Amino acid sequence: MSDVLTVSLKERSYPIFFNRPLADCADVLLDCLPDGKAFVVTDSNVDGLYGETVARAFQTKGAGVYKIVVPAGEKSKSFACLERVVGELLANGCDRKSFIVALGGGVVGDLAGFAASIVLRGIDSVSYTHLRAH
Image (cartoon, rainbow, N blue to C red):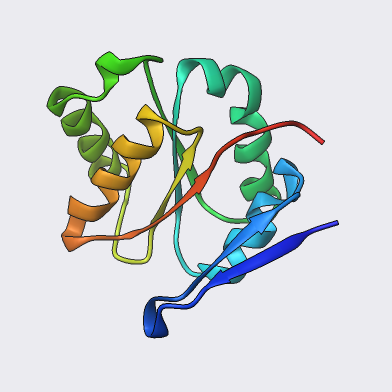
């Protein structure tokens, strides 16, 4: 069962999906952002649990995907880590159609969201948090 809540902000409206299996993330995201390459930003803890599931979901749909894994913890909320993330985005084909998937909350969400807001004058970003496998 999937539930959707739409945040109504005129031309900046967006959906929030609840109760979707993680393996279906590419279906959901590619419906909203069909033309770009996915850059998954996650930490070393979450990557070990869910990183391959998310990467496979995009690969199965024929979408480009690239993972950027940062160390778990508050020390990754730094300009040095931000510089590394932005550098990897640009070095691996990020363009204005690309989007960032923040896989995990907290530091990862903050870091990925800020990177998305500054690279190429801003690209789309989404967040997958409170994860559990289905």
